[in-house]
Image (cartoon, rainbow, N blue to C red; front, side, top):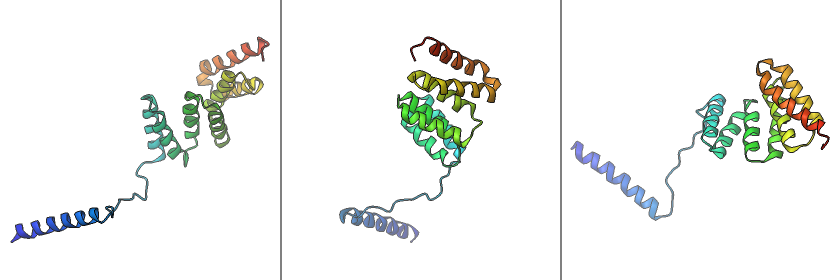
Length: 158
């Protein structure tokens, strides 16, 4: 008796699926209302994608993280910089700085962006100096940015 009931249920579900398919109706979709990942997990997943060169997937994760984690704007800017989408990179670096004025990496990266574009070198110098002041632990990185900016300014081309 038990086997017949199981078969009946199986064939009933199979028949229902077939009828739905033939009638043009789609199967019900599962909708997840709550994101199972934390903003930090989205950020970490984005970093992993970025390291693999999967920039669009990284960008998607960073944008999800940015809803609650201002640091994500730095990473969004970095992806846009890699894609030579400099206006978007600038916008996101500025957003990272406005949401966290103590983000030395965002200040340095915006300075580097200006140096790369050979634009706003006065502002680039200020940003690089600010990065040095905010995080002396990364002195060698930020100093390199500042020295390149100063050298470019001294060349007189800009």
